[in-house]
Length: 378
Image 1: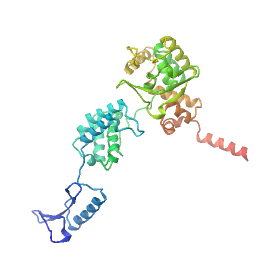
Image 2: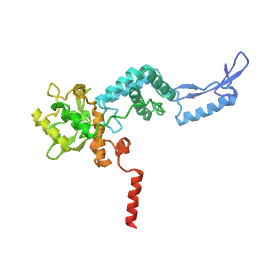
Image 3: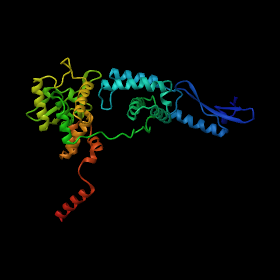
Image 4: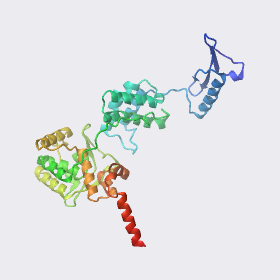
């Protein structure tokens, strides 16, 4: 192997000849910023090696090429988690990460991402690497939702790393994840919802009612205080949520999560009965055994499931109860903007993407309405 320093055409070009007499060429450039050389691939012609060197020199000048390979996935993950814990790294809305989100990111990065890619340089991980890994996770029997939950923290890691120059591309963009071919969330009819509420013990009825008739998330209804409920005005205020993992009160899911929700008569009756039952005028609506903090969600859900099973009724999760609320509100004529506000969605597009197919207004109906309007004006 040799480098010809006498010919300008061969500056920075290495040459080698194998046992069969075939000659190959490789170019190199020097990155002054980090004091290291970058070598290109071996090529069969001098022209190809020179072309690589010209492109590499231009890339160095434009700072799109560097001899610094950067941090590993393990090092980046450690910085990312530490930054979230310190409050220096926040969500896209500028809010601190919720304890449950931090716990989930830390768990998946530590237990799955780092064991798979820890020694890999962050900027060298590719889309095929991530796709093949996701395929393996699915082949190992992980559910579709679990595979997605594993990819989310890796995607967030790159979203943080890209603007800081730690990576140049996000290899999670374009990953095809398994759908699981799962059925859509169950939605109860108004009659079935009433049956499900009635089948519960009096102490649990208001909890389900707040979700199925008020659209509250489980964490939101567990954090409710009587001072947030105005039965006379027929409204309640959602100002916080309960994080059962960290056992602390946190901000609602988004800025739009802080909202005022109308209380329909069925829910007003349930809340009035609950107030009499608990003999409370202040404090939490729902308390755990210690009387100071909300009940454990799994305990509450387990108790409800047992009661429905005894009554021969199908289980309805709190997330499904929230979907039931949205469906009933749409059927009752609540417009998309109002529903988006009542449910605490970050934007109306979330509401339309999830429930748009339920809003009235088929093509035939739209055509009939437009014809009527034009005829009246003509």
